[in-house]
Length: 107
Image (cartoon, rainbow, N blue to C red):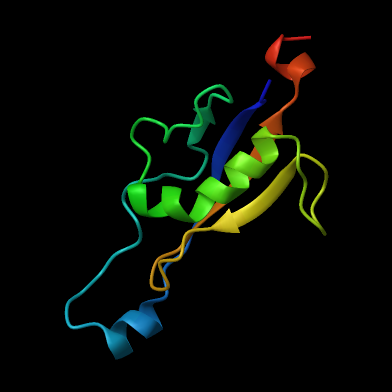
């Protein structure tokens, strides 16, 4: 059985200096997410959560699958890691964490 995984938006960043130097039109910080947004990925399906950015999902999917299957990441606390989407101008930083069975049961 796979564990569910929670994705929480920690930060939305915006590199205005890079946009000014390298973009042909004005950009703004990511509007898809707000800090504190949470998404649950059911371990039995591992499908992209409703309303989640498809671009960010491609970046986070391997971390979600690893945690759901019981894996961990070197340097991160067990059952969690911090990752970001690959948008260099306006990256979003996420906490990805396994929901342990006792937490899911509400104990």
